[in-house]
Image 1: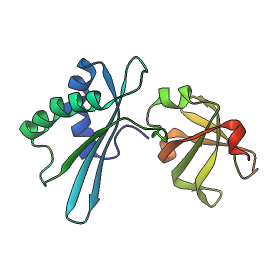
Image 2 (image 1 turned 60 degrees about the vertical axis):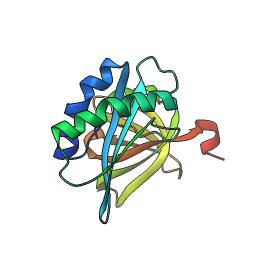
Image 3 (image 1 turned 180 degrees about the vertical axis):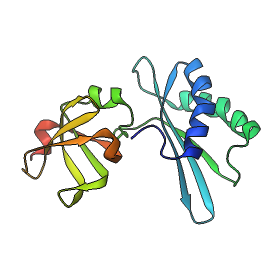
Length: 165
């Protein structure tokens, strides 16, 4: 699990991370979404100081990286650039995300099944040595998952108390 999932997304991330950081933001995720003939390049970012991202921040990032992406010409096909905050159900892509959201409800999908399952929902209890401990919602106890086995992880906008209701 990282801010990108493939080589193309990695090349895009490497091209834009510097300019985004120079504006006082941090890159959360780069994702290319293909739906038939149309591609969307989704860039999610956060403010380094932890305050909320607003529309002006999105405009600033968009106007900074759009010309850069055009010049670099990393994506061969036509695409729509979508720039946004991570939102309330934010993707968890970096170690700091897993550390910052201990005690919060998350859902995740693994690359390789664990006990015949790939989808899990529960409360993030611990993150250390590249391993997550999650108290599962379905009362199956605590499971440990290596971060490298995570295909996708998102915060659920619920605190621990509401997850069990």
